Length: 561
Ligand code: PEP
Ligand code: MG
Image (cartoon, rainbow, N blue to C red):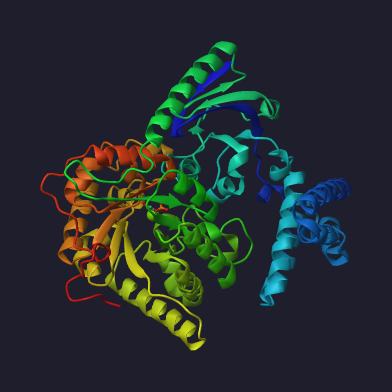
């Protein structure tokens, strides 16, 4: 047994087999190959393996979903036989001395790009198929297996580092735990692990050699420890710890149906943060009063083209319907920084966290934003929808976004498509937004403080950089003052304010926030019951809730559209 210490970024304990996730190698040094014949052989072997994998998947899909499900993989197998696709790859290898990896990546980009450019929805789907096949071939060539296939049984996923989209790609029920060598507690990959309730540890010393693949491991997300081939003593100790955790969870579950009311009788809204529609189950199981943050950008990740209005509509409708009339706050796409999607075609930036991301993309490409808003408004008929805008720094941005939202409503009305009004809000996650929250409050119905970004921008400490953990302090006085100022300005204008960053789940802060006057806390589903307990043990003294529309009170001067 070898024990490694790291940083626990998502709590919980798991024991199981380690699965090494290796990414496709598409680096420049792999572009050229000396021996074209060898590259041809490698490509043909990868093609045969891809065909075999697809055959298996086709059989499985036929069993699970019939003819239609199997058809997808049949189409993928046909791409592996497509003369033009193969001709291009062979020419890249033979004439331009490309490595097999590089030739495959080039073919994927070229043919998918051609299909996507045609603008026909059906062909756009074909573009996604081509990319999928190219990625499968690339994964086989780089020695990594087919992730979905290898994760047939629940495993502990180990990787150098994971992006948010890679983390989201694995089915939750197959993920016992996640261990990476690099990563920060405040990154979206870690947040996603917490949302899914999967233990996660960042462990720089963990060996990721092929021999570790398939070995038994144990992960303690609370202590930040990873055991390779744990002995009986370690397994017993972890088993005991897990039993204690389960007992604590059992006690917390007794609070599932209890109200979110403080000792002095103040009612607080306790909502859940989700990243994809499937997270609704765990949000409901944990007794969430609503969804306080649906990170809609996850609908844009792990794919090769923009989600259509129809696809988005279906996802939002599913969440709204399953929440059965409880509030669902969707944050418009926050693409950029660590959440990238190649097909957006964004330029490479020196400082992506401060670059073209979130509403900055929406304002420069209004059609993208309006597609999302139309999908949201269409879904609004199926529940209690609110929409909020991320990364706001100026009032003009909000005014423009509201204009575009009004255009989206106008387009639906012109086409006689039903929709309902939705509350509109601003995420306060730049110091500028907090400092001008009096101005912003005149524009919207609510604020939601994103402390993850607010902390990084207020303290100039990159949330992705694990070396800055000592400098990235969400409880820093500067951050708390910005929150306090936001609450004061919100209430003065008669709107409500919540916190949806990870700090909302810090139970040592619950009473402080409620005393400040925060109206809503939105946290990972796995933290709901812990925060409910803290709310029920808090005493807010004389602090009264905000006069907000939901409590039957109307903001001063009526609602501004
Ligand atoms: C935040 O910044 O606090 C937030 C909730 O948004 P995200 O973590 O997705 O950037
Ligand atoms: Mg943010």
